[in-house]
Length: 66
Image 1 (tube, rainbow, N blue to C red):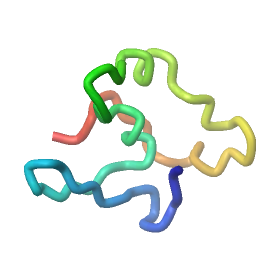
Image 2 (image 1 turned 180 degrees about the vertical axis):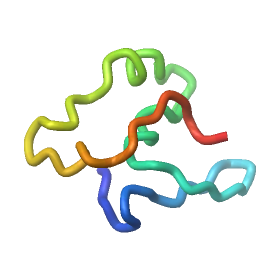
Image 3 (image 1 turned 45 degrees about the horizontal axis):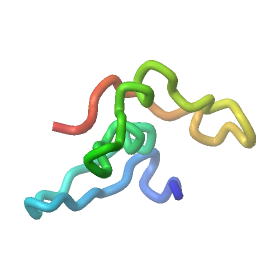
């Protein structure tokens, strides 16, 4: 699930113990497991207008966080 608790961002903790500020739409670009294919997250993004459209106003991303 995805909630807007920090003005379009969330904090993510990674296995190397780094903490990064990640945009909500950027969550779809992270490699969540070995077989997760991020190519389609970039070329076929989720329709942010569908449903309530609450994520439409947030920044779009082309790559995961550094």
